[in-house]
Length: 146
Image 1 (tube, helix red, strand yellow):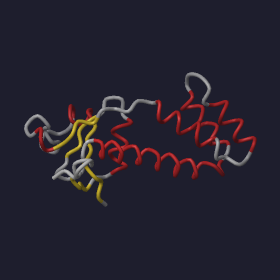
Image 2 (cartoon, rainbow, N blue to C red):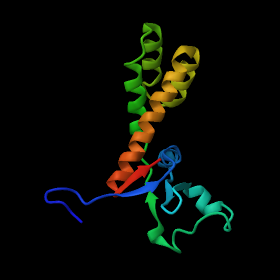
Image 3 (cartoon, rainbow, N blue to C red):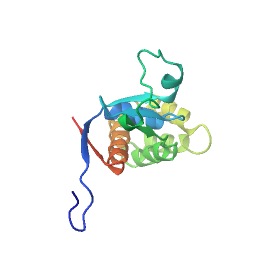
């Protein structure tokens, strides 16, 4: 049922947002099984145990293909996180780390030099990734349920 001028109602689905975010961050993408909320990487679908892995082609309406989101958002997360870092030396090191190729690896190495910011980064990054996963799911017409 559609309300006048509104969007169609979304369907609630129990889903592991961390798992969905992980598969969206994988270069090959994967499959979200709407029956149980499990996200399967394309690698597992291709090479996993056929008795344990779903066959999306057998029941295409039972899930959604997960397109990879690429690295642009993850890089922006690093840049936005740097703006929250209070220690000037850490801000400088982290900003220098994300400049150019290899920025993800260098960012982690720089973060290891500033232990006080590692936990904050993990929380920040996780919130951003799961937020994008939740938005992707909403765009597909579903609400993530706990």
